[in-house]
Image 1 (spheres, rainbow, N blue to C red):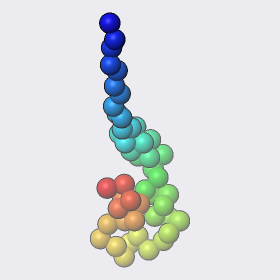
Image 2 (image 1 turned 90 degrees about the vertical axis):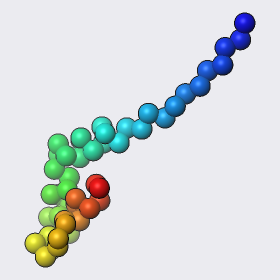
Image 3 (image 1 turned 45 degrees about the horizontal axis):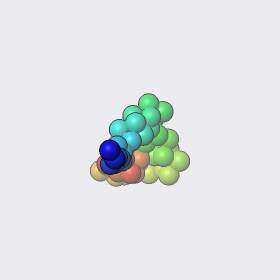
Length: 49
């Protein structure tokens, strides 16, 4: 008897997003790029949307 196996990519975006939030990556990017007070949405938050 033969079995067919398949796999699916479970995508780990949730883990990556959680880690980025935990280390405050959006704020780090905003500080490095500057000018966050002049924008409607910060560049750090834009990158993770």
